[in-house]
Length: 312
Ligand code: NAD
Ligand code: UDP
Image (cartoon, rainbow, N blue to C red):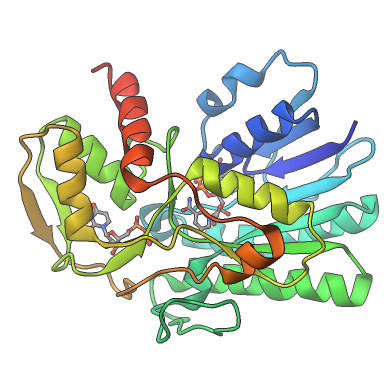
């Protein structure tokens, strides 16, 4: 049986990955300090003989008993409101946490996959974003704590690959959504759904004409699974290229929830990227992967999950 460590496993994406690997007959060790995650996301796995939880901050020395075949390093605040509240922890988990998990991969001879992000492209000057674009990031802006930590994490990953021969993978994840996102997560989709379901004003930042391209979590998990089992060392974008403005996304969610909410416009956060859309040609060619779930279907599943948790 293959044994995998998933850091940040009690978070949104990490908990879906725990499910994926448990369902594919892996032994899963989930490591988390609950700084933005929750035991609720993994509660159903406690009691499963192939699942183990370790409460630990991955910026500190990591000890795991026994063999490890794979390590997925997903620990990091990911919502802008989280990393603005937790700037030092965000920098530490991307830098020190990546160093510790790479050291563990080297010691255990495990394959290592880092969760990188479309934020490495910053406010992009080329559109859509291909993996060979180096990005346009403000290192001293508020988002710099996240963007630069992830850029450092990619550099550290390549250094361990080149200098220590660690078998590494880098996924650049574009905006992903789905069930289990925190109700108060602060990202656009959970905010809009939460507000629309309660008939509260839906908060669009700026003029709402900035774009994102949103991927349903099941598609992302499948892409990560394929990348982990592939031979690809260089970064691969995983995301859904279906681009939409935030204003249209807000309207779509109001319609899907049959909400009476009005849209209100609020200040645009500093350095908020104006456009974002993945070029997924590499994922298609190398992994034979592309996003399958269309936005309406993905949003409906997410709205159903939010309704349950809100008791509606
Ligand atoms: P999340 O906040 O739901 O999950 C992050 C998890 O990491 C949480 O459970 C948190 O408690 C844990 N964590 C943070 N610091 C830790 C530390 N020092 N030690 C141990 N655990 C720690 O966020 P998410 O959306 O699930 O994102 C997961 C990963 O995917 C992050 O690395 C993020 O940068 C990356 N990512 C996500 C998206 C997205 O759209 N969801 C996009 C790009 C990249
Ligand atoms: N946004 C918004 N209203 C909200 C939350 C976010 O208009 O209540 C905007 C935000 O300014 C950004 C986009 O939605 O332009 C996506 O934000 P999110 O936090 O989901 O992710 P980002 O891609 O910025 O990391």
